[in-house]
Image (tube, rainbow, N blue to C red; front, top):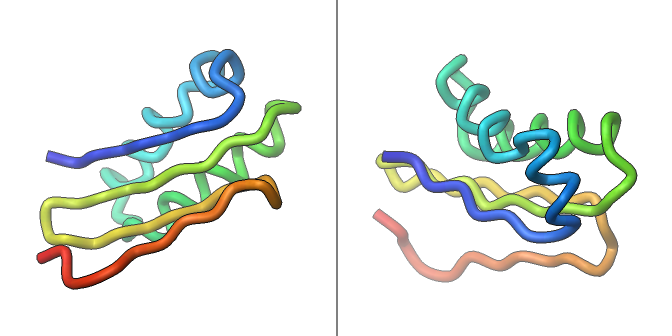
Amino acid sequence: MRVIVHGGAGEDIARYTLSRRAIGLLEDGHDARSAASAAIEEFDDLAAGHAGLVVLTPDGEVGTAYNSEAMTSAIAGDLR
């Protein structure tokens, strides 16, 4: 199982299927960090809104990305 959590401009996130894009990138071989970054870069090219992603893989990999100065993320401890 893979988990994608997102926040931001809800209509744009749904319209451009941000979570699905991140999952697709994982399926194409990206690690969690690069999948999150690439999905946000694609979103930024397509949408005017802001968004952030947290991507979690079954192996315990975590990736975060966002395109707004108002969003932040933090990871504490070992997630494995």
